[in-house]
Length: 399
Image (cartoon, one colour):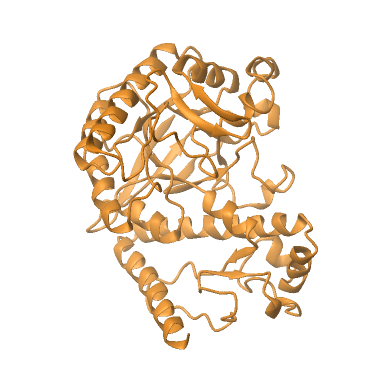
């Protein structure tokens, strides 16, 4: 893997770069979104529809090895097929393997087992040891993978935070020593709500032979206010020449918070949950100067970031989700049709929504990169947050 930082934004640690994964023909610009592919593919988008998404922005996928080893094909079968790329037929896409299932599964917070990490799966709670985890990685052959991590929520004790860091660093050493098939390893960084332990973990991981950094333990109870300091405690101790990936930050405001701290790669579970709930993203993408107009959208079922297409107001709405959107869904279908599909529980509704939401969120990341290159990221971030706050304030007055 090759990674190069191309630009830094004025007055911020936000940075734009390019990552080139081995065997992937397309370099991907960062900050970038990794599409959630828990079982090898996005939840509702079939392989023949993936090319309809912006390329090469959509060529990074994140998957959880748990969904193969626990409820799917065995590691031996996947290895005999030739790995994950050949199994799902996506040779030109990059796969990142992260053991944490960021859609539904949380780590075992109270585990006292020192030999592995405990995870809740559809097949029950399982203990994954480094040797078992590396067996999964060897069979799947992802482009990059995050080492085993002992994640903890924000409310645990200082002693538990220290234990989580000790275990995570030890497991990183075990994973590196057991790695026989290559692939770029991202060293896991944890530490809960302790700035000191976050800093210590980052310093320990930097000393190891890793290709990048995976920052875990976020989205587990910490507030937005305390998260900035925790992120900075990590990124301030990382080398600039290697990419940083984070899990647990999905909302637009959270992504902007992560970018401001110097994060390069984000997961897209936010899109999964939006799509499952029948929501479509609608916030403007490109305006840095001035206020964006939302006059085309109804206030019913909308928070001016997204609209709820299950709302009855859209039953006879023959307009696309967004007139300015170039995605397959907006170019070919109406709100009324998607509302109908949702009401009759047709899975095509989720397919069309995920195409739009993914296309739109990739555009959001493209706008972020543009703002960084112009040196105006903080202005972009502030305008976005102000527009959200203004709407929420107006909605509260009208309630």
